[in-house]
Length: 314
Length: 216
Picture (cartoon, each protein chain N blue to C red):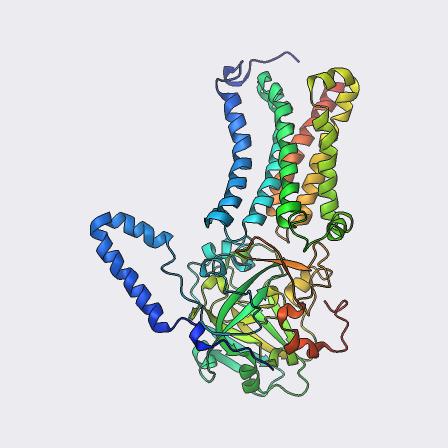
């Protein structure tokens, strides 16, 4: 698979980034005497001093793709477990504590078990990768994820020959996830991938964004990222990974099968019944952009679907 | 039915009511227009991460609110005896129409970018208008408001006489279509359109009960 590498000279070195923050802190102290502590405190909450720098290896980025600002990545989310408004998750997930966290691995595999998150992640090397993200609602972002290849987890679980699919489940706990008190979807959220999709080197189990642990609203502590599929396939706050012989029924497919399919590959040719998927708006940009087949990852993933009618298997 | 004393003894329009109404009706229109401009041109974040959708949805919501306010005038008058409310009904109806037009313009020009960009062509919009029922219904609701807006002048009221009253019953159809459009546009979470539906049901239900009471 061709992986476009960004020369390391293009990335902001960690040291500079730390220096910049130290500089800002020093400026804050120096300025306090002049301006008064109240105004400094105000500037700190309003400003973007807290916004971290994007880091990671870019995958499939187009020449005009730049990382979406931290404020948008962590402030504009579809995570119905914390409310259906885009700003709800950031507000309602503030008190969610994603530790301790157990991931159950079961189904058709030879090494099932309940794993503490730390033990689950330890054997893998954590990577930073910058991916494009296309929501089924026709908006998009570029997000610097941190995570481990899902393939690592699958290999350790040793799926049997009969396993054809992987099913993921989100935490079910209406006390901690207030959105689950309303029957908007059939909770808990369920998603699935074909085993070959799940093993694809681009498929990531994310633990972080912008080099930090995942904020709660982004699916802490563990979420799926499949960059060539619509965002809703990226199930959040995963507690269970199950190997199955039959195709899992994902939550959106169950709730509106004529609008959301199992595959959900980004496809400008196949409209959503209520809107065109031919174009998208990148968050932060005014002009629309054309949507790319497989969200720009066609070279890497199109072969997975040779012989499949993508109009019917949307 | 003998006219009861107006509620709270408010027989005449309180001072400044007209101004308050004009301000309340125009501030949202101006605010969202400014906020879109500011968010893109000046880097503010008044409307969050997707200012265009935020403004588009807000203008749609204000269309429905103005429609509900228009339909609330008659029941309010009858229940409170505040007959001075009557003269504001036309203005509220015209505000509803204006917000509907703003909603359409933001959708077509800023969201779909029909005129300012050739990325999305007329063919796509035609598909949207004809093959996507929620857009068809929304467009129909707006088109049906057009004859009501055109015939809202004093001269037209006089000229059309009884048929004016009949024609303007279209407002009930417009409100129901607008609400259906809202229900079809949301993704699964029906709580917000449901609030509008309950209010509309109350306003229309009152008319049914009232009409029955008058005939018996």
